[in-house]
Image 1 (cartoon, one colour):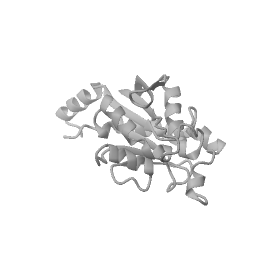
Image 2 (cartoon, one colour):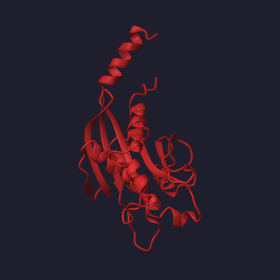
Image 3 (cartoon, helix red, strand yellow):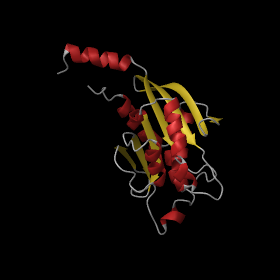
Image 4 (cartoon, helix red, strand yellow):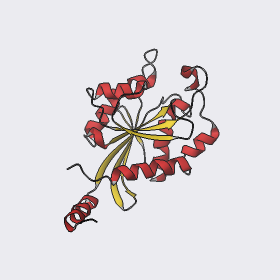
Length: 208
């Protein structure tokens, strides 16, 4: 049973506009590939919530911002796609950490209010695995983010399953199958699942 005091705390909590930064990792010059599924999800969220995305040279990426409704909770949501690119240097996603860290400092500021969406070879296609904290699990983009945050690992990861077949380096750069693109797209069941998980994060009571 919820006590009157607990109910008052809950009401105050739900009346506050919560801050949320959703970052999609990917290789901007290589859209529609398995490795860029994080970009696909952020683009789909932008379309669903009608959040215009625009380039930002200071943040080195594409950013959009709006108040959106998740359930009955109003969220101050920022969407971000880092666009770091150095020709003939490291693979593109591997150096996105500084751009993500800059976006964090300019928006929600607290890593725990950030959700990083990225591909996962360890999960089957069309699976969504939510994780808070922990290691990068071999994902170079997440490793770059952790390094840019000075080793801070206290942020959410939405791991989008892409499966695995043959050489991983080639596999992730192959085109994302059409059925998976539709699944994670603006009208897909996968995006519904992403929104439900975002709502769960939004409705978590504040730490005491």
